[in-house]
Image (cartoon, rainbow, N blue to C red):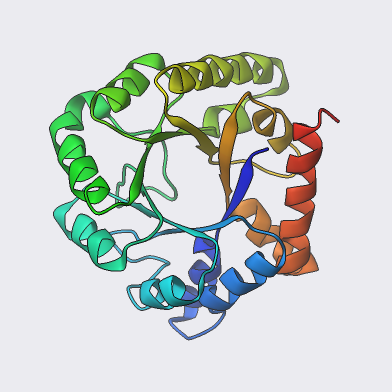
Length: 242
């Protein structure tokens, strides 16, 4: 059954809207764990638009489940990861003007830099995942540079109109098969919600689902623990074929 990684970035987004001290994403991480989260995911962006450097050591000291650091492939971020020593690093593309991550890494263009980052981070015993579009060529390239996991970008599936949803799910299925063929762990995330998570959670050997905005949005209404429990229940039901 897929594990649930709860991305708490948008708790920090609310805090940074007023440049104040609340809501604290570290508190949110604790509540997510009480709700059954298997992991906590944070993206330290280069522009520090939500998660701040202050948050990372506090999360590392207090998170008792897997801590996943999403980051760009830069020397600054690699050094932060080596100092922090999260359980996992997920390398993602980053553009300053984007609202959220818009697609997967361009592995063909950045293969040398990615290979160096993968080697440096894995050399310290930290698992590395690459955030990729569900296409075969970047997955093959990820395997060649030694990535241990691939997180499939599920945005096209999540945003697809109803008549295109099956085709996008098939694309994810074929990409997932390729990831597993190379012996890498299969992860997925981006745009997943309470309404569309089931088919993705049901993909064969799905290991980790990283979900943030939908859970944080629901937590405003029902609380973080309840929001996480509800998502976990949906993932469990999907794994059981219900």
